[in-house]
Length: 337
Ligand SMILES: *Cc1c(COP(=O)(O)O)cnc(C)c1O
Image 1: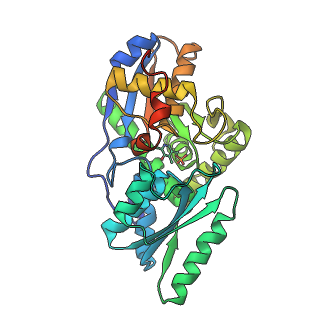
Image 2: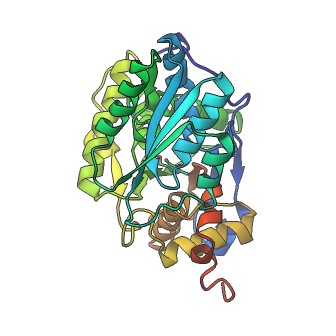
């Protein structure tokens, strides 16, 4: 597997840091906790979609596209970063926003929605939850084709095999970086949503025979459905990269106990996790993804799932702009905590 053979744009001119979290580790009294700062990736406010877009946008440019079209929830980090990548490349960008929680779209909401307006999406279509998103995006692409333009459609979260290569590359980065740090990791904990991040890491560690277990904390789907999706996507990414597929089922582990009432809906455990990371380590999480994923990490530590001397890496996938759209939820009960 040699990823340099794939066309790739560069949006982050460095490896994101891997840092210890000594105060959070002490507060929880469990294993040694470390963090991979993918919230410090390039493009407007960073986050995991930047790694996927390096491969996806290179493909769009190779195909002669002048416009990127993608889809996400009403506070989508992926839409914000796709739009930022389009601006960096001199492309236009159109967004389909899925109102997964009825009534949740507001044209003048803050957070990522503010950034859609600031970065200047050419067109925004809001569709009800469960609508046919692929058909809506294809409709926009057809409108552009009728005007002689060329659209490139990126699936939700950038999570196809090509986008997942961004996290196959991240797995290599983590292995090289931890070798350099002499940091022998025992476990990785990451968010599992549209799946490209979790699947890419599993694929990359599998191809490297790293023997490094990954737990994906679901932010939306139920465990069995998510594990099936992640395993298929990991194998697709390996095939695309020219490596042998065959990720074993035991390498794909999803914990769905931290979703709460549903995607993007706040939980007490999320709010606690956001506050613990802020107050012990000065690190900003987000309410939709990393707050629930960190709640999963904290829950696993409290359940005694790791030995005291073990080293656990939490992958921070970004998302902090959404804090400004959910401020009451992350501050709820904050005075005591
Ligand atoms: C999209 C996103 C995730 C989930 O990543 P997937 O590859 O979609 O599973 C996690 N954290 C943040 C901040 C995100 O925007």
